[in-house]
Image (cartoon, rainbow, N blue to C red; front, side, top):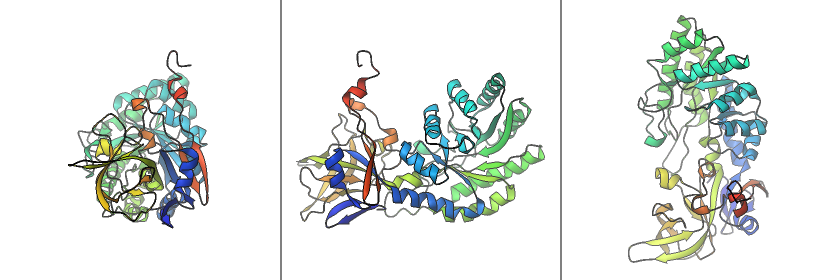
Length: 416
């Protein structure tokens, strides 16, 4: 429970009681521990220090500007997936030569924005995209630096929705076709081939799939050199998991670095990493209030004021998150489903959780909710987006205020 501990029966984030934050900003809200964010990023810096990688934080995990600025101040770059994430990276002050642009469906406007920003490289997803980038770069009179996203056809052993390196995945150029596409790239007039990239999936809790993928990239880099194509960067992507349940034991960055070291040395390339969840995941929690306690002959329900629109991972992936009370009570332990107010049967945060029977108005904390939580939120059921709070020691700061109803309709006709 990094950053979240009990003091005198009350749950705290670092040095701040969560009930005090709730009293000011209301519920539900997201809260993040700055100390945990810093420690998680430092684990990559220290664990991989010998390899001196470029660490490009994956904005898709959580793109709040305050968090992005904090990681930029620590030396982090940005892995972006859209024009909006590129805009956020620039706003956060990330140097252009520390930005890589991923994604399989980059639009003309997004590509032009990235060319104008002079980012480090595009991780190109297809031959068509490669040719299109060359055409746009030629029109602008610039050169585009690229890496090819290679699909190594590796099963990462994660949820099918977040496995991205299998042969049936929509992402990347299959490794058997990569040489042909690299040859084409080397002949295009406004393309500079500087890297190779892969991303095999998310929430991977073993080192073996990463090492297998890097071995395949290493072999391809050496073959490309024989073709006269020199690769300067090797990008292993992100995907390192976190412990959502106590029995999970993902490798540490230092353990990953030890396994990567001989392969990276063989290529002579500079390593790029794209961590996301492993930096922000356990630093955050969703805090909700108990609205009603509903007991039926079949099931018992805790109805809270946060729903699947605020936090979709349990409904979308069946994602498990530990849920703990904001105050420890001496009462009977009961089996509950923790559900939200959304008009969907799939609107739940946790099922069959044994909890001391809370009172109406108590807080519940959904842990490990720093990644793929707020970034996947919506206005479903016309519910405003939540506030976000960053805790630093014994102080806390509102880093995103709660959306108002008026703001929610401002872009609609008649909503001004």
